[in-house]
Image 1 (cartoon, each protein chain N blue to C red):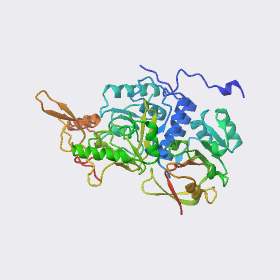
Image 2: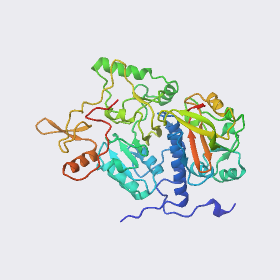
Image 3: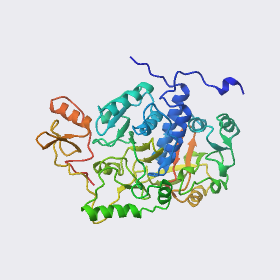
Image 4: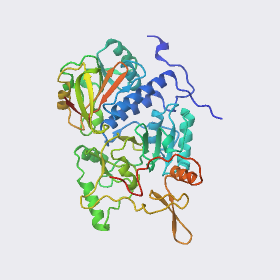
Length: 177
Length: 304
């Protein structure tokens, strides 16, 4: 008879959070559900001392600091957590290079996923196209995102609304309707 | 800040063998791999109690994804019961307490070496492929820094030249397994050494495929509904193996990828390569009630 390890509460929570994150990026446009509300789940699942992070919210920044990550300005960060998107942010986000597209950043943004602009998403992970509603972002967020990236360079956007999660990887084309 | 806040409770071992920081690193790379389909992302490739080259890449991805409610299936060259598959399956079950299965329909996570099951995978399933050599350009460019530059430039001319030379020399493309394929119209990847038979199964599939090379420390992915097109010339169509008319001598199932088993008299018989499919076909023939899933190939043909 063998005894197997039981996941700790932390392990179970981060595993469930990453499950939501990976499917958010694998199926852009399909709403995923975090185990609990808020960005702290994403910090727990992804961030440690190998990361450089920019974080607006002071409480979350304290949590990020405890993981050992370096706090940097947005243009140096590989993970960016923002509640209000400054207009210039999208021109600063790291996009990696053609040689190393993995150096592109992951941008985690607070958004309103029940009201706002209607977007049509197309690309890998989407069967045909999908229409989503995203609010709480500056008006020219999506055109700016498209201008800032040249595939395969780019960054990933993770929209968080409470427990709900919507991923927009760089491979997704966003059309504002 | 207290000492207590900086430490975590003692555990005899981490759940799923890998420690939390190893998992976070693989998670971050998996996100990037999914965001740029087919592009090889370097990752740390931590040690697992298995020699590199025996599926450590796939194992690390599986160990990162598993939780106790995830049912795991492991395939080695189509078979669930070969030594490599049985040991990896037992290892995952032991360190993560996951239920295991051999039935493709019951599995949540499928780790596989060199085959994709014959039954269509669903959109909630994850296929993890073990990759020995992740670099499709290696036969034409052994220097991996230059190969990376070629990927960056989408410079795949030599790849086409290699295929052309094979056709001129031999009359057909000689590439049997790991047929170079263009993903999302941008990156050429090797789909791990799956036979040509299996490559069309990746095109616009419903499931998520993660390919991981532990020895070479590269991870790449094919998200659901992504174009995967084998490199072919427009006047020389892509051909899968001629297995459509072969019948399995044990299960009688026909029109699937077969293993050839040489006989003493110089002839050979065939046995269906997807062992779980074969077992289910035999049990159904013997009158048992067995659920057979929809298959990618119908009557030996892939519907286009």
